[in-house]
Length: 269
Image (tube, rainbow, N blue to C red; front, top):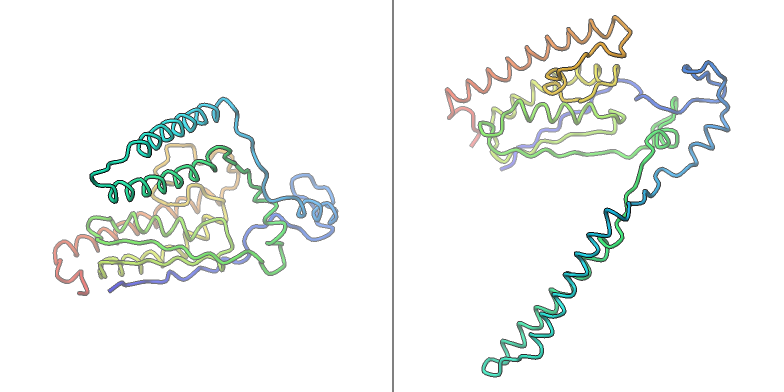
């Protein structure tokens, strides 16, 4: 029986939006922004096709042509050389081979002219997530599956969930569900701790545009986290958040230790 836990989306107020109302001041330039300019930008396409250099695609096209030639030679040989002693079986095998050959050829068509696209997330925000208006972005449900908490460390699952909840998207539009095929109490208790820590981590990520959003990987970075950060508040909150995350890890590790010490109590059935 699967045990599913809905990690409730956390409310952190309005998500950051690129859209502004008419007559707003652009903070980066202190220039009055005309609403008509914003409307023109919002009407622009959300993506564009990016051409692939011929030097990259032509070698693959040659491989496709070579495959088709070999396939044609093989089918010609099979059709022109029937097995008279087992004609029904030969006919059936040839039909199957032709069927798979057609499937393979159809599979090559999209690869002959692949398409890459470049997206414009700022235009998406201008069009569907204007400040002061209800967000029109679609709701997103994300499922995380796990089986055995002693083989899939709960701390890894917790970091996955925290990075999902802190995604750059309206928090009331994101839901995370965890499906535990092992129905483990360890997973359930670890998720309870994660949901509590997420209330502070998501706010921190959205306030300071944190990347990456998984705390384990964020705090493990060997980079100057003060670069481009001019507010003393960031330094203070980062230190406090790191301390809270260390305490969170201790609680998760304690749950794992207890599950290893009393394995019969870590399962629900």
